[in-house]
Image 1 (tube, rainbow, N blue to C red):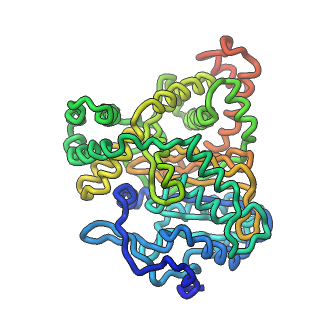
Image 2 (cartoon, rainbow, N blue to C red):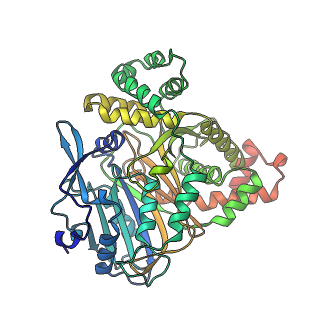
Image 3 (cartoon, one colour):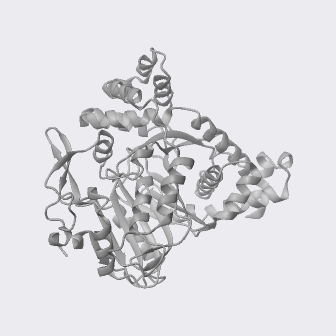
Length: 496
């Protein structure tokens, strides 16, 4: 099925469109050690037809014509150019696992694909259907970050899927979850924060112009705040942060190979119940459990963290305007979140994460960072590279939590049982943590630099036990009697 098969799309015109400044920044951030690619994994029950999958995706690309365009560098900047040789067969392919085709082989394949750049001669996305996985068919999806952010890609997935298995490929997706997602999640859970974006972009332009000087002398960032503007002050706070401490997770040099792993799901209702009992958000609880898993990993590798040790995560915050809720592109900012990896008491970690998240919700950090990313998209590589290195030195990991569909979905007639995704890292950040809820379960994925952490499965295997410890502590001890410090360590050691 080649180019002739898409002549049905009446919107197709041989034209070029300028790429947005923020999307350009994500395109130019790519380097061999950190590909700017979102990798997803869907597990199915029942057979998946490759032909039907191609037909379904081709038909339902219509509202998202961007996926039929490729980014092209021009003297005037990056543009989207329609791929006149578009062939769905080049983007949706079957791929096999070596025997015994189990979890290890699948993990190795996803790791290899997450380390392999998408071919630049065509639109930057691919679907790989694995038909011989021992537990059933799986689909590996790779999409370059310049096309869309995580919130937009969840909407794309909902648009591609159905609520029943017998929907025909040519049918419009009658998916009530899509409407609920746009009207509920985008509006309630991740409400847009558009106010001040123009000013933030202006501050970002000034920051990029000063980037080289700030790398040599971060104190120069104070000049950006002399006007007393709230946005400029937030930028000053971010730029004045010291470099994150060196741990097994943090290094100046990365390899070009990634390793990925994912955990068994947690029941979402159990997570909600525990979060309510602790008077925190579900997100706080999950981040605290992930922090505990990182702490446990360090302890098992002869790097027991000092109880005062914190590492920073860059956390995406949705800034998508409601009138752009159906569009692709990147509409999010980044905030720096302290992860109390040195805290031995699981409940205290929850409290500290909760307090840090509350502080960030009251700040303008995300809006400022979106303006900075847009300004980076305007700047030359000579300015962008040192600015990116400077900012990435301040964090150890990228951490994202995406609320997914609440009921099971069907793609090309097959039921999706589980989902997972991995976010790209920027600069010299070599660790990515992804948390996703789907159909009443919570999933955690880890992407690591193979040189620093060759065994990410040891981290994800601690995610469930960390949540269980939190649940047990909460049930055993009233809040004012929760053991602290060495007592908590002794109790944890006793439980194994």
